[in-house]
Each structure stands twice: as C-alpha cells, then as structure tokens.
Image (cartoon, rainbow, N blue to C red):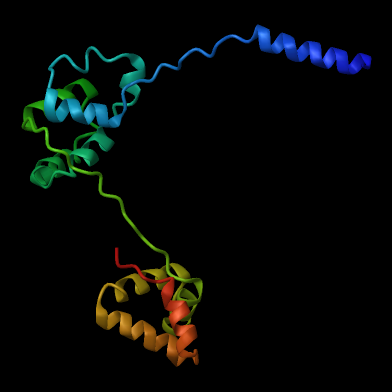
Length: 178
C-alpha cells in the first residue's frame, strides 16, 4: 500500500467516525398551515404566538389567493385584495378570522394547465395576421377556445400548403383545452 493510499484510507475512516449526525432542520409553518388556522381554528392570539420564522411565511397575498379557492368567499376576498398590503399582518389576521366563517371543507388549489402552442403554429399565425409572436400566442389562445376558432386555425395551417399529416402534427401541440 502506498503512502498516498494509506493517508486516503485513514482520512476516510476519520470522516466516517468523526461525522456528527445531521441535526433535524426546524421547519416552520407553511402557507397552508396559516390558511387552515384562518378557516377552521381561528385563534385570536395565533399571529402573536408565531415565531419569526413562521411570520416570514405569513404572506397576505398568498393567503388571500388560497382563501379565494372557496367560491363562497370570492366577493369578500376580492374586496380585501385592495387593502392587504396596507394592513399590518396581525390586524390582517384578526380581520380575516372575523370575516371568514369557520369551515373545515377542503378547497383544492386550482392550477393553470396550459399546454403551449407549437412553434410552427405560432409562426404561421404571426405571419398570417402580421403580428408578433406574443400576439400570435394570444390570437391562438382565443381562437382555440371555440370549435369554430379551432377549425379556422386548422384551415390557416392548410392555407400555407401543409399536408393533412403536417396539419395534424402542428395542431397536436396546440391542444389548449384544459
């Protein structure tokens, strides 16, 4: 065994023996924990009892966004959007528990499922309407929202001389139905 390999094996053993166990990381409360307290627990001293770490995760904008998933609260939450950045967090929490009725129902976070349009389709729309790529994407989104618009997009691609198979491939990337 060479001197370098001995030193290497000794340093590896030292590392193995000398390792300290990883201390568990302290996890604070998350957004959904705050929303749960507002929706169901509604403790008036909740915000006062939060640690500094937990107060950093108390984001009024995101809390309002989470509360807006309940269709019954949309009007109230919509009115609060105007003031969320002007009210101190402690008062904001107190206002929310006074306004939001206790409710343990689950309202899933609605995510946008957007499938992008194919690059070829956007180029053809941009060329046909003589607009930018961004505007072409908006045009394609509007057109693909109705059956008539989808047919017009298909015809637009055909008008540029593409075969049925090519039209199908170009349109495949543009199914924006969800």
